[in-house]
Length: 160
Picture 1 (cartoon, helix red, strand yellow):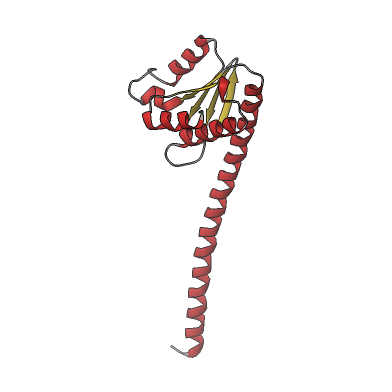
Picture 2 (cartoon, helix red, strand yellow):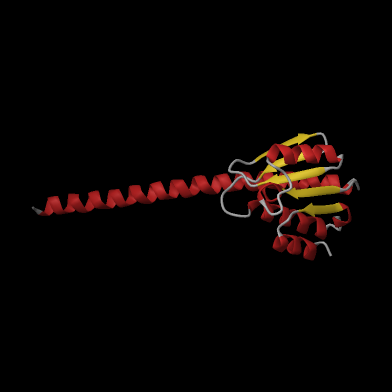
């Protein structure tokens, strides 16, 4: 092996390292873009719900999967929970964890999926909204329905 072969080998190794770093940076960039899109959507939803609260009509936020999968189970599945919300005649916002951020409005029932990854995304989303409502003095017409005792305590601390 001569000096030129050693230089080429070194350059090839460096190019491979750069390609690996570029691939990693591209993946991180895509993840950050997805997170930004999700945060923008959450912000839009929070603004919409804040405007609803300012109208003075009560709003219940339901911890979706907790009410379906938690203990005690309050619905046999997602469709049953949504049907309960519709039948209540109240303004209800059901928040589910979900890979893809999405929101629908059906009469007085808003159904949203958090998007993103990780645990307790719906809890974090709801807590952030309750905190915002507390800052604006709008918690008098807000309630949160969940069977998660720790989550309920965190919500209650904010609503005092």
